Image (tube, one colour):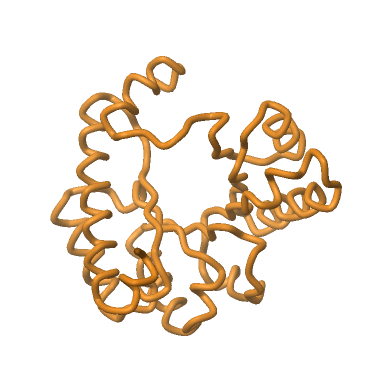
Length: 203
């Protein structure tokens, strides 16, 4: 339904709703003692929306959440739609303290110049490379190179699609900073995160 929502203004309302629900959940986790941040995906249409910065500023203030605890994930293709507007919005939000990550990195063809201008915090390596890196030296090379690129730019590297101990060991040996995937945990309802985090010694 996201492509359909992007045809009109529905995607903006949907994104803001998801963000507000995420902020509410952040407060619930905070009260339970879990210190974490939240990450929300921004679609192309929302990323270049002229009202985005004002809306985010209003939510941060109204819901009393530190900007550094909010991260947005954007794709390379989203940047290509309107680079000037996207960069301007990202830079304005960066001034507020909000962090940005490039999601599914490696699947687009955006200029590396954008990575310098965006003031990112991390690159997320697309699962299509991570999933097959054990059996494909080519995919392993892409993962390794992306990790090195992220570190050269002063960013954290995040591997998506970690589905086995072998893959986790491989990315760890390459110096990857963070991992995401079903081997670690699948999607969970907000209220299930606290017992899961406690059981795994997160706090």
